[in-house]
Length: 345
Image (cartoon, rainbow, N blue to C red; front, side, top):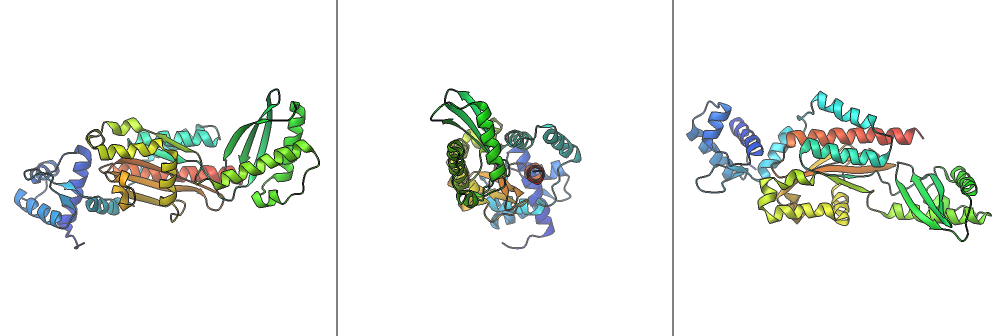
């Protein structure tokens, strides 16, 4: 791309900011009147024509103003990526909401999805912290009815799985609690390989539960990501891009398909460090469904122990200045919370 002059940079950034707010093509007269630019409309038209020639703008109709191209948005994001800040008052509100919430991974994920959707007015996606090196934390065994028992397995990092077991014969709650206590002492902090290498337990119930725990941890480790939480679908349905474009609405179908979301997260985040943030504009050639959209996505957690991802999907003219710092801030908060959970064990 040719180097932009300072005047071209200013006009391009003002035009994109205006288009993000209005969703209407921006003309030279609008820029002069709205931003009090000390240039003639003819000069601005010439600069807009040059920016169009360079690929940063396009003209939907002959008589219309200009709108940004994908390259225009990429330039805009590159200029404000490290400049956009979340107001201190908003940071305080979000932090208060998290620290008033019970110390529960599921509630944190639900809250994070809700906050991201509200602050960005987009569709949010949050994956629970997950690791492919799953380690045991503790198990609870709860008698429900007859031979049925609820097993609640918690892993280091906060992942939780629940399943109903049907035992060969009814077992008292007292015996179930004793079994859970013995296994919690035996398995605390152990990974899959270490648990698999343990000698068989003499107590038949202990061994049966141990076998089920090992199977559950292996299944969890094989998953691409933790549980997925989304919010804010109604935020974007009224946006012109989603109301008028079949292609844009296809992007929203992703949020109803867990496997598609897992694939999106898995293909986006491998090269991203915890705290790292990416902005996908127009799908970046990798996701046809996102051709009319942008997505801001970040990784959070504790490297080597438990990490997850969170992000916001919206129209390509989303408010990057609000969405980027919100995603970055919430990712940082979740990293702190996950770290506190793990280090406090």
